[in-house]
Length: 163
Image 1 (cartoon, rainbow, N blue to C red):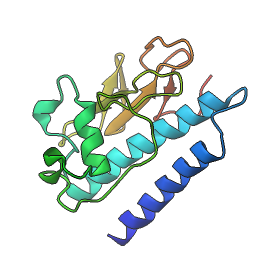
Image 2 (image 1 turned 135 degrees about the vertical axis):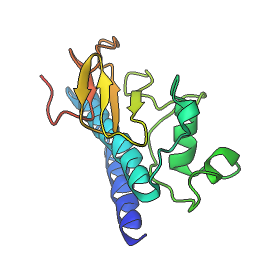
Image 3 (image 1 turned 135 degrees about the horizontal axis):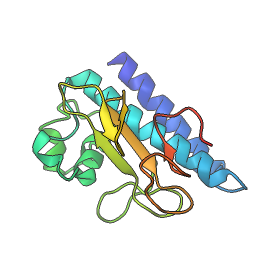
Image 4 (image 1 turned 90 degrees about the vertical axis):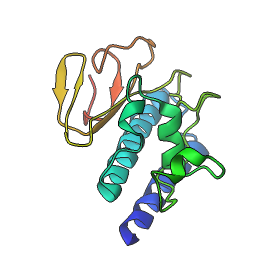
């Protein structure tokens, strides 16, 4: 629990820095913000999975992945009955990333982030035909707003650098 609180503080600090220090402006600001956000979302999913031993959504909600339910669980939104059955500790794993009215997180260009979460018993996913050895991956379509499945100008949570 102590490490969860430390992680929550760290994630909140990054979110604060991004939004209140205006890192989203400037020549590379949108890319920097997207890179930070995809990392924060994927890390929150992985931390939840590590703490509870399950994913933040039921397997039946995988096809297609219901980002609204992932959002609800990681944010521990009061009054939302879905998260109370999964996030039994009511821990807030993530804050500060804009979302649409449908509960999907939005990248700096206004598009929903793409996300794949591995089944509970596996630790890798397939993105655009390539195996990624992470239990959760998140990516932005980038400035061109075209989903290149982690290639092109996409900004990914599983690569330490782009281009």
